[in-house]
Length: 101
Image (cartoon, rainbow, N blue to C red):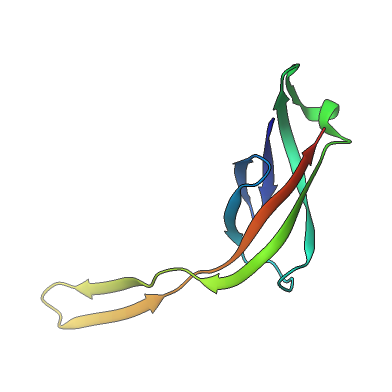
């Protein structure tokens, strides 16, 4: 059984036991999180929309962190204008505990 869940403006395909990195959630390590289920698929087929209203996906927060640094370098040719910045996107690592539908 797998499900498509939405969090942080993105969608993830998950199964029980999966570990995913999502946009930073304001939760502590060890907290339980309910994720919004958009679609669920099992032996009976796929269900979407109104048929997944009562479906649930529960996850546990494993860690909070920052992704690898990316370098943002902007310049204007022939103008001696340069700007170098770095960025590390914060994330929350979740472990999927259960998918029920």
